[in-house]
Image (cartoon, rainbow, N blue to C red):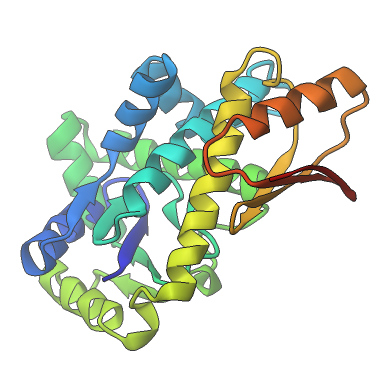
Length: 268
């Protein structure tokens, strides 16, 4: 039992690989459904969420705060699904959103430019020049967004457990390579990795709850959890906002203790 995330450039065959893994492993395939889940739960339109997560960040971006909130919504939607294991996710930065869980297999899929141009041309009815320009624009936006949010180059091979190039391997061959890696003992869920997933789920639920609350949505904090104990870090100048954050955290199911910075704020 494991979780497989697929990182890929636009029109690089990620959906085909995910469907192949579904056929061989029976894993659920998840992609755009995450955005739909988040939109439904938090009352944000799917198109708004998609634009926020896919468009390139600018140096001056008046919607940057909203983007951070939307990311919290999308992350908890993904973690809610991933907590059940046996899924293949090809979508927004899954290997970052599920960071710290050992039984996640992080796959990077690469495809030749002519392969990608052919797919864009057929799907979007563009000529070769327009298709190449579209691919370049979308890839640059994703790269900038990944660098901005996670301080990482999404093309860095050290971020992945397996990198597959479709230049000489077809999708079925890539699928078999992923299955071989996912079958290794290291990527099977055990008590430790399940606890890591439970911790990530609790932290994600709390972060989303803070983002959804009009009073605490302005609080830029980092949240971590371990066995029901949560740590909240951030520079909140307003004591009333600190109290509001702690109060909201106490009302999240599963939270048994709260530490803000170096102070223990709640223990149950």
